[in-house]
Amino acid sequence: MRIDSIVAQSAGSPDSSPDSFSPNTSNTLSSTASLPIPDALLTLIRKEVRSQQPYIVPGARPVPVKLNQNESPFDVPEPLKKDLLDAFFQMDFNRYPAEQPTRLMEALEKQFHLPSGSVIVGNGSNELTYTLGMCFIHPGDPVILPRPMFALYESMVNLHGGLAVGIAPRADLHFDVEAILDAIDQHQPPLVIVTTPNNPTGLAMDFADVEKIVQRSPGFVVIDEAYHEFHASQSALSLLDKHPNVIVLRTMSKAFGLAGLRLGYMIAQPALITEIMKSRLPFMIDRLSEHVALRLIDHSDMVHSQINTILENTAVLTKELQSRPQVVVLPSQTNFVLFKADRDPSALLNDLADNGILVRNMGGYPELKGYLRVTSGTSVENKAFLEALDKVLLV
Ligand SMILES: Cc1ncc(COP(=O)(O)O)c(C=O)c1O
Image (cartoon, rainbow, N blue to C red; front, side, top):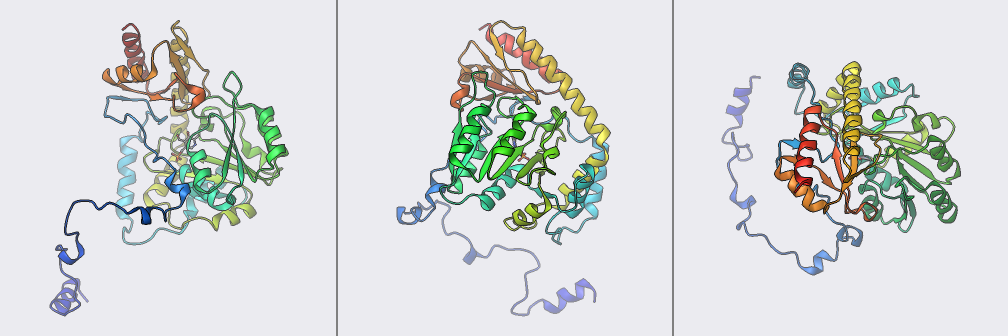
């Protein structure tokens, strides 16, 4: 039957759908003014949720040089992007994707020589951290979080009713491994989380220390390797076949330049992945994201050459910052650099933004008062940042 004959048949029948959407006033609000929510209702919201602060990236004003979110400066090249969009055009928008993106999961397993069933793909690795909370945290459970660590972990632990046990860093801002081991002995936590290389410091852990933590832990150890591709000599993936408590988190937002498509993944023993999968929402990955990720895995030469350029640019950026006497710089094993200058960081950030450069103030971490974080961009962007910095430091 032709479509127009279906429309003709149904037109006029009492339950027929309108040919086009016209506003149905009984389904719209009578006023655009917002209604306050009474306290009696607000108190029904879980206290763990109400006590959270919303996650907001500060200072997100449009500027020509955006170096505030550790993104890759390289977008997918235009011909490949067009090709991907053509492929997307052929896909059915009206059909659900597979519950889990099995082709991508299998491609990742193949790439890392993992047994089948070792991978979960998430809507960014951020989303997978919530899956970890759903799966492992009972109310009141201690979770060891060395500091300073990517802030989302602490809010995830609090949100799930856990007790975040922060471990102060050493004076050089590296994680204090001895203190982490002592805390594991004391609290016997179901979950320990480490990030290596770490955001916000840019520092990587000694691999032997990661293994010590894994061996000492009675529970699971999550090793977030969001920046692994910038410090690829060792990975906790090599611990997987000795230690069933290891969970590795990675992302395609940084080295693969796909922050806008939201793709992260988790790797663990298949029997553990089977359990974690039960706390997942289905259909988290759309067809386009899966397709793009698969194509970029096929274009690994291009991605590797971008990573090498980012590493070279970061090394130059670090050296340049180190050469300025009024600037203190941390060595970076990532695509960003943590630094402080002899000026108030908020004023410095604003002055840089006035000069078209956006960086991030890290002063929200008590250990990082005075520090700013600059993502390494293209060599042109990094040069523009350094020129602006010189200009504003002379003020
Ligand atoms: C340590 C760390 N883990 C995870 C993420 C989030 O990655 P995604 O974009 O995959 O959610 C970030 C992002 O900045 C990060 O720094």
